[in-house]
Length: 259
Image 1 (cartoon, rainbow, N blue to C red):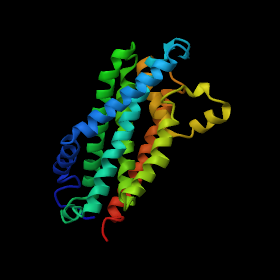
Image 2 (image 1 turned 180 degrees about the vertical axis):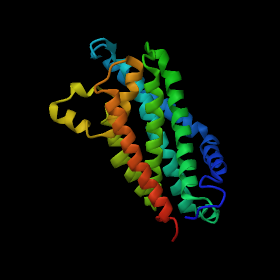
Image 3 (image 1 turned 90 degrees about the vertical axis):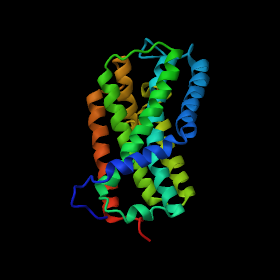
């Protein structure tokens, strides 16, 4: 992809605005629906397990569940935004209008990932505002909330960019989401503490970078976590650098963008 004489991020704001507007114009589907899904998870799991499960010996299950649902919503919607935008543009053929612009690969990356972060954080905020009424919750270490929400949204937006570049059909995208994103999300400790798992599954969970995003995010609310938040930060930041680097490389080489 070509770079410009006016800087690597020239045109980013226009493409970013277009991508944000794309999901916002159908916000009933892209924002309200995920919020409703999270509330249903909370009502079902919270009602069934509230009186039977205590986490960290003092935290009620519903309170424990809310940050996990918030972060899960951030991650899934950040991924969905960039991946769905690219695959739709490729299938409908309107991607050619972007290819003829002098946008650099940095500009594409910043716009697509930036819009994904906006959607993920908007949905996550909506989930938090709706679910916080169901159980007591306070921000013990709020800086961790912000750091992991932003990093998690950026990483999944980058991963969505890779998936959107790779996929050529909607069923390929569905396979990527159903066999990679969904299992990694649900097996990351959203609905449970990994300390409640057998030793083998605890070890498997510690290989999942999504676990560190959710555990670090939860640390911001309760001041306790399964692992050190600094370890989580190091792992999540490293994972983001790797995924973002891969996405930038694919964009720079025009991977599956030109046929």
